[in-house]
Image (cartoon, rainbow, N blue to C red; front, side, top):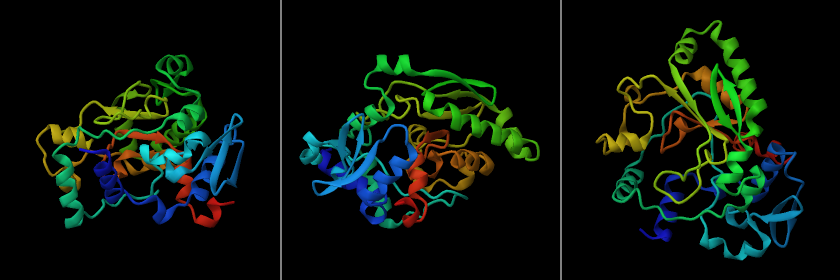
Length: 288
């Protein structure tokens, strides 16, 4: 399937950037989320841009490109800055139109050839190769389980740990969930499944909470497909493995998004994306 067609699918199935967040909102949210990395945000040469380590990155229709490549934005897929709703999770209602597009995509869902230009993310995390990533990672302990992650996550993940230990004193569901955790997976140099794009696991800013058993429920849309579930988007809530509300709440409070809220759900997955949580705030607050 061509890149053009995949781009159409992306914007039909994921809330449009233009519909809720301008380049100004995203750039200013990034500056607030990473004050030690992003030096300034300005409107220059007709669009919003930010600087890191003395280099400017232009909005470029959501691609965040170095100025020398800003006019080539159509060659790349946007970095995903999307609408995320903190708080209680309500499964998305699938319209007949979206359902038909999902069926079309499933015909060749492992052939997404869209390329993301990685210079911005590489600069943000200080990682441009597997060797650099391996040197940068640190071992942390989360809920008494070891996990290898980017040092950027040490403080926020430590606060999630503290929040959950307090919650566990009174909440039996959270205690049972934590007891059932077999492992916590973090850094892994790999692409996003079915795409050539680097996973956030490659930067060490994503972690997967792996239970001892999913008890016959589905935690990830691709695993559901591989097990023979063709219309995975129609799975009933009782068929989907999930995470206790208090666990999600603790992660969101410290800048992590939960993959279980995505249409293409990945319920074991948390990503450190504080800019996404900032963009969920009222626009006038985000622009400050």
